[in-house]
Length: 163
Image (cartoon, rainbow, N blue to C red):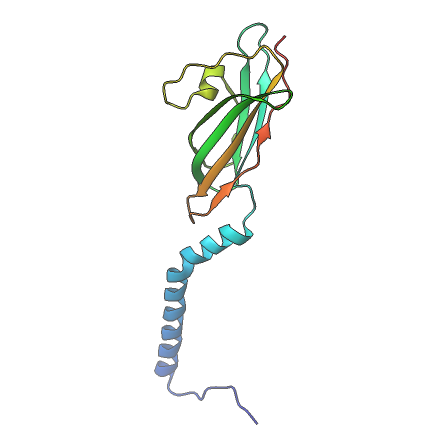
């Protein structure tokens, strides 16, 4: 018969064994924590880390505004890519820049035409196309906690007819 119990010694020796075992487990968890988060973000975390909702708001003859709501499932930093695409899928304009995405608790914000396409590189504001178009964005981001990267699909606004 195999016995799985450890013989009791003195109370102090038993307490010391428990203390040593607990200390080793705690140290192991502290050292392996970042690796566990990296594996979680790489293999099991919900994707995409950032998603977006876009809508072009008509303002009656003046430049339209853009209702934009990026939502982050993971706190992430990375690059955004915005493009204007006509109804046949031809890209009219592309801009890119850097951004930080923290959470999805905020609501949509209304952006001016210039501010949405501004990437802090001193480029002029793109003109509003005269043909029906839509605005699309996509992201390549890196999780702040684990360093895992994620590339999102393209999110587009409904088709907008400026006429």
